[in-house]
Length: 232
Ligand code: GRF
Image 1 (cartoon, helix red, strand yellow):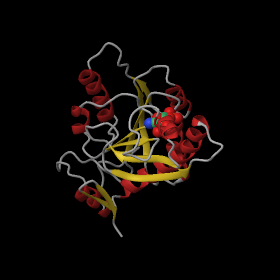
Image 2: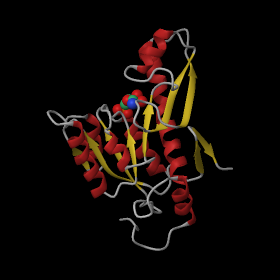
Image 3: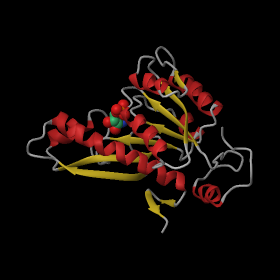
Image 4: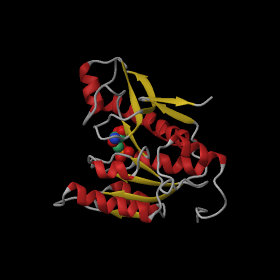
C-alpha cells in the first residue's frame, strides 16, 4: 500500500521537486516511492536492490514492478520468487517505440516514480526517456566515460587499465552517458583475468546501485551541468 493521495508534500518531496525539472502535475514522488526495475538477465543487481530495501539501506521505497524484455530472464523468475510483480514484455518483432510505449504504460500503471535499469540490454527510445525525465538510472560495469557499451569489463581488462570499477548514472539519450551519480573503483590485480575482474566489479555494483538509489531518493542533490553535487 502506498500513501500517494495522502497528506501534503513533505519537505523531502519538495526538495526532489526542486531538483527534478518535472511538470507540477507529473511528479508523483511520495514518502514511499515506487521503483520499477527493467532487466534482461540474471538480475543480481535487482536482487541487491531488493535486499537493500529489505534491510533499510534504501529507506522507504518499494519495488512496484519488475519488467523484462525476455520472458525467460532468470531475474524475472527471481522476482516472482520474492512475490513481486514480474512481467515479460517481449520486444521480438516489434518496433522500439511501440515496445517502449507498452513498458511506459506498465510502469505508469504501477505508479513507478524511479526506473532502475539493471542489466536491461536494450536502448531506450527518446519517448521513454522523456516519459521519466531524470528518473531513469543505469549501472554500467566500467568507470565511464571509459568503455561504454557491451563487455565493458573485458574492454577494460584488455586495454590494460590498472583501475577498473562501475558507474551509476542517470540515463539520457546517448549510450552510457548521462550525469554520473556514483562510481566505485577497484585495482586490477596481476592475477586477474577478465572473468575475475568482472566478478569483483560486480561486487562493487551491488553496493553502488543501492547507495545511488538512496542518494537520488533523498533528493539531497543538484545536477549542475553534468555534475551530480551532493547538498551538504
Ligand atoms: C551488470 O554488470 C551491469 O553493470 C550491466 O549488466 C550486468 C547485469 O548483471 N549493465 P545482473 O543481471 O544485474 O546480474
